[in-house]
Length: 183
View (cartoon, rainbow, N blue to C red):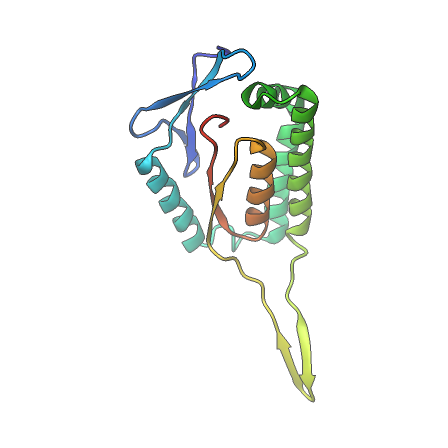
């Protein structure tokens, strides 16, 4: 195993052990070697995450953040992935059993999604619709609320980036449920 550290859940702005203390061993499908141990997110952990996400939405944390700043936040995540590209691709390869070339591609695609939606954040706008003399209808885009992202095992990084970045860019708060075997 690469480390004796337990990978914790990120809930409400901090890394937390699971309430139950339950652990999941993550195995490399090619060697059956345990490569990580993660804190299982049980029902109580999920309740904490959903409650925090609702509070973030209710308190308008992302809604009131300037769209440009939401975009910059996503760019910073993309930059962090890029800075550790090789390490993250190797972990992705070991977790999923993908060829390293495919794992590299998934990391690159995740970075592209983060940059795409980061760039889109301050460009989403409503429409003005002429309705006749002295009349104009207009549309206003507004966030939906809390977005739950259930990520499959076969593209965890890419699909997390795609759904998380879109939700954050548009001012929604997010709870991500990673796959148990490839967290």
